[in-house]
Length: 332
Image 1 (cartoon, one colour):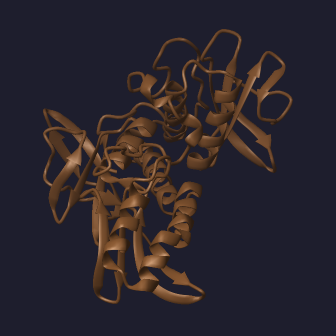
Image 2 (cartoon, rainbow, N blue to C red):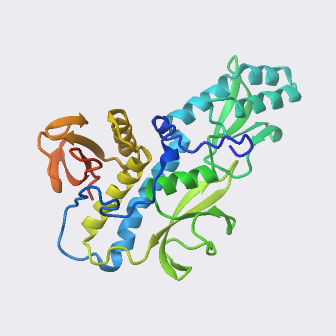
Image 3 (cartoon, rainbow, N blue to C red):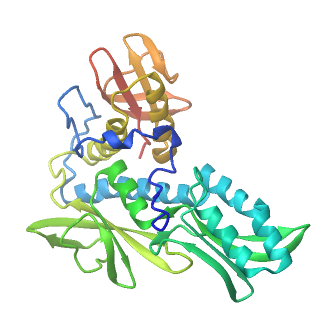
């Protein structure tokens, strides 16, 4: 929320409140911090030129799931319900008082502990109020009613462009630039290239990158392009299965770094978040003791395991001595 100076960075997981401030350096694939063993299933056959695209497919899915949560996540649904039931706004609309409508919309956007970054209210083609920052994404629309009678339409968002950029960077570690109407808006890869085509390769500061584009929506309508940049030299000697698994593992470790130092409660928060944005399962063991998650009695540090009626590739690492985190990554 640019206008309110309380930009909402992590709607995906309120459980991470306060943890982002302790974010560490960007993690690489494999064993980035050297404190443990990052294991991946090894399959013969180099991925070669398909390596960057293999990693890009994982990062693309995570970026899309992050965006989907901005549209349909719990906090978004809660804030939309607050807008629809806010009596000062409904009363002002019923009475036909434009100043009171504007005041109510302002109060909703600046309400402490709520997460609305921009709110627009319209009756027919007439704009009644529009409060919030200029660079906003993930608009959600609805109808304001009183006693079953429609009074107006609203467009609401709980995330701005910068917040989405930070989420992707912190969850994935990939540089991301956002474009609108062919022009650069903001981002982390500098100097920003001209708006790139999906699957293209660009040169920035002497380095080659593969581009993976994610389509997101501008507020109140229109499109934005979020471009992820994957190093074009990624993992040519590794198998595609290894690269895919290590890419999932890198996401889990990025999230774990945001929760450091890890505790039982934070391990559970990490497991919930990993499941939400990857579809994988995260289990934590200390010897034979199960700290977080169920899973099979015995877990290999690498390879595959049968659980919940399917086989899962296993990625694992030791964040601290005596504890091992197992990611059962999405297969395929």
